[in-house]
Length: 146
Image (cartoon, rainbow, N blue to C red; front, side):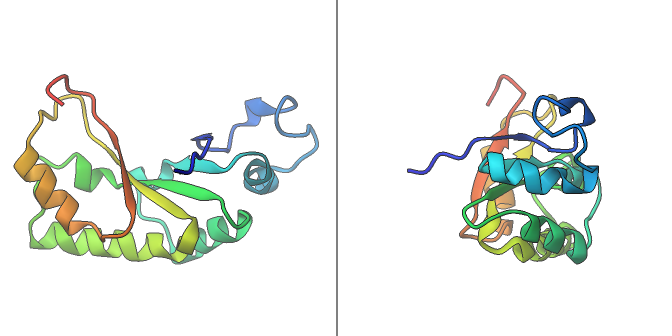
């Protein structure tokens, strides 16, 4: 079993000078981060779709062996109905296609469910079956029923 240690994001100016050198430009934060830690959660994918160019930039900024946990877009995890319909499946496919640009640096799809989302194994199974196979899944489950 491999263990990857990282944080949720890397773009924190307040980490200067303790983690990032004081003079390091923000555009170099990810490269510096990826040399020090082995993984990172990307939150930006939760709020909006990212361009292929952005995924390629993230891929190229990290060394071999680095892993990203990509937070699945909230349109998928926070929808009123969790089980995906045809339209949502198309959105999932487009989301995954972009994430695959990371290549072997794609470590996991992170599914962050809202606090009101009660356990529903059938709907969860339907959602998980709509996600591409071969990529690990990580979960943030906030409702006590989970």
